[in-house]
Image 1: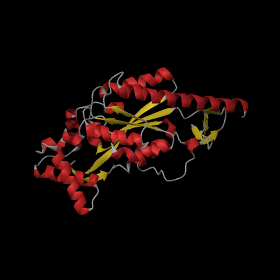
Image 2 (image 1 turned 90 degrees about the vertical axis):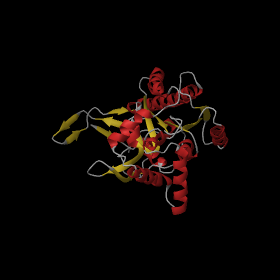
Image 3 (image 1 turned 90 degrees about the horizontal axis):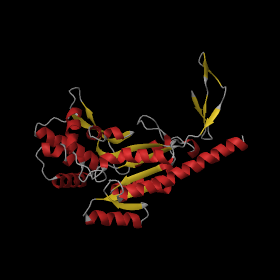
Image 4 (image 1 turned 180 degrees about the vertical axis):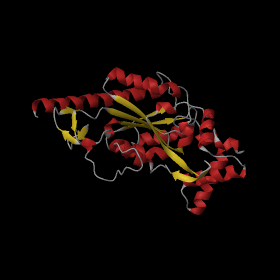
Length: 314
């Protein structure tokens, strides 16, 4: 059984008697040894939005740009939110083509997604690297996307993620998508950063109550965010202003994407910029390892300070 106190220390008790805790052999344990590596999905891990690899080709939309332009135009005309608009519009067009949108179909279409070079091997390699720095540090990979959770869950890399935060549909009794259930847009993404920070990762758990930084399981300084554009700015800003880190990536040969990343760097939204190539010894790999080195050293310092306090001040 574990009791968490306001000091940020977790005390483990080893006896349980008739529903009452017997507080014997209290052992303080350092709890800030988790690193969260958080990724946007579309444009960050994949060159194109996931819908362009999956649903859109199945319903006759060959040019994704046409669909996204239609979404932007309708959202502008109606004053609607673009994520809600794209989810509804995609459903409507699917019904017109008599194409079923079910969790099974969406997961099966995920096999068509193409990734940037080295993505599949990146996650286990980086996790193993952290263990070479400190065996007591845990690295968790998260996805935070406006895309569909059902699609991401069906990808070949889904098993690498500790948790997937993304938009979702509500399905009727026949398993058919009928309307959006969860919406994740650029500003709502920050909610999930706080959920990671506070250890309240389920939507039914409130994150509005005050929680002292000392008892938050994943401090902001242990969070590294990787994204590709303006939709990632709110997350990047929240994380960096609270002591965390961010990297902006751009598609190879994409001058517009590179320009955007340069602007993010100039504005202090990110620590570094790199081409989206996740292979070993490429720039993303090198910069992620550099920041992880810094984060792990911070954890080791905090752990030593914690041990010193228990040894000499308790």
